[in-house]
Image (cartoon, rainbow, N blue to C red; front, side, top):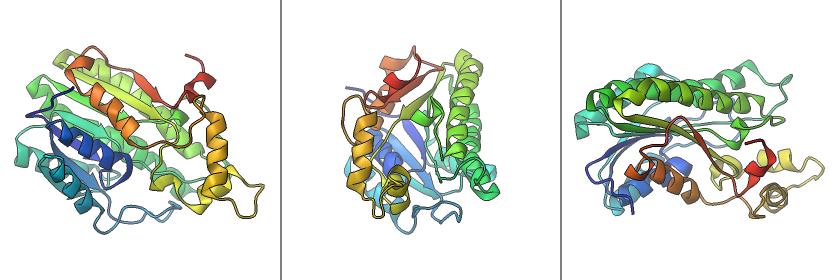
Length: 278
């Protein structure tokens, strides 16, 4: 079992979903955790985003798991806010050992129909936000000559996906960025990797527009009709799965056991990765 005692983890998009699961998992294994989220709705995004007390709810779960927690409201599209978040973490805990660059958004539309706003918001959050986060923690990890960076990509970073071109482009970009950062930071003992999940059961996929994208042939598609399609895409024939499966992979990548793994992307896809080349 991985021990992260004395380690400090920074997690973007920690208000709920995968970020919340990551925060609780790392805390359970001994890490102190700093989480940020935007705490407002981006107009181009079609589902309800983290608002209100989401950060506080995550913090309460982290503390219940035995970890200390710093919460911070930040929009990862804004580099100064990311820098302030990391600075606040160092002020509070004295160091940064782990980065989970997890914040992400998506919206649907063909390439021809994608609005400028959706394109910018998606790329700025999912790709620029990862870049700003890596850039912010790199000096601290370089001085320590150690660190673990894990960025959230997607199955959409592995293949072409219709109706979500902006999201797909951003997630392909994350993998390229991870590989470049791994080359540059490796001499300082810092590993940089990506995780590529398929369908994870979070609020990002639990809304009517998602169901309609999967089953445009139905007048009243439901979660159940969407999951029928998901099962056919997963080789294991499971529906969308809990975020804990992604967090378990993150835990491995930030552990001592993964010290020789860097510059790669690990699929957590219930076998969906059988559909693309190695």
